[in-house]
Length: 262
Length: 358
Image (cartoon, rainbow over all chains, first blue to last red; front, side, top):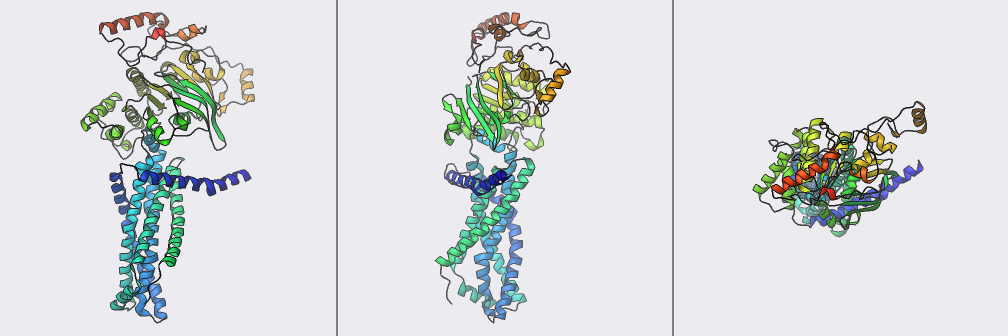
């Protein structure tokens, strides 16, 4: 019994992360191998857009709204109603938008990629591909990881725009804020690095989600249930990793980029 | 001509579970070999190890002068081009139709024009009886059709070695017989080395040149067909005669009390059934890897069971064989194409000692 627990701990702490990093390195190497699979990349990017764009917008609108309501209410209590636009920028562009992107990339794109690769794995398609002399990392994983990162960049932009519009709407229509104050404070606090760090986060999230989904998919075993388990694990592990990465990048950002003075 | 596969001391385990250990055998070049074994003895794992999909814990797999488990990734991919593999369920790419599936290796590894690819693909699809189904997706066809399409894909690059995982599972007996005939004809045509994993005793008894049996994590025996079909070894005898009497039980191995009860009740595995004559290619020509009927038994002083090598028409193929060889040689000579097949050798000069002891 204790032996089994010991095996489990070694597996979770050492073997699985080790194998995952090995896959990351192999994928990194395969990324620079010619010819790049453009067709697969475009198909996957289109597929990821199709499963994420509508849910992203539908999540971003109430997200922007709720932030405006909550933070706007607090700011009003503090007597700085004219700065609600600024708080929306900080909250939405810097944090909410990468987080919403990460939720959608992990939950929709990651799950779909894992299910796709996992079902190929249990149907022995991956084995067949290897036997036919084709590296599945180069053929399947690289285009998916890059497509995930590429789409995440745009999703982040989309969430920022939709979230800010939602915030504007709630602030101006429901909280009696003025459009001029919203936009003026927006310009006072916002700076380009806010958007750049958010885009960088989105890129990292996309790569992470693609890699975790591919790793779990390629290691699916035990029939259809195994694929279901792999998808489940993909979503949970990706969420945890993305939130951790978000924290680390934000902490670094605050150290490296000074906030804009007013 | 096919390539020899030499396996030395191969051991594989998953975690603490040993699948098989110390397996050594030589699959002779250009011959058809069949690997048998009760369910769960790791036959498919063995096949996957041979092609480098699973890494064995110990041992060597020599393909020519290359030791497969120790090859770099790029060399491994290069070596795999020698192989054609038919997986249990065909392993077709679900997003492509059958034509694209079969054309896939050609498009990846050759610079052939699309018209030539089409000709080759349709030729292979006709060979496996799937002409007319090219535009169907794998999800729209039956398991048997998927398997045949998988075979067409495995054959499309004219492999030197063909590994086949349970060609008969999910296939009706008539299609199984046709598929076996396809294997024989292919072996005659391209001279590839075949290793077929199967549970079908009829296939094992009539199709191959060599038979192997995996049992209890070991290779119980591997050698010419006649060696196993005339063997008194209890496991081999029980398996090849599909008998309940013997050491193999429902959960792989019978326990001692079951065996004692069997002995007390006087259950007897019975006499060995006659060795059937080996199936011939459909054009009747003699394959390079074919063993002359009765030659192994004669060379090793083994008396085959009565009625062996006699076909349905009552012809005894031990007597018939020299005449048959002479008539085929003469016919080929008249056609001015002796010997026309790749690697074809004079069957009367075959050596029967090689591989028998491995």
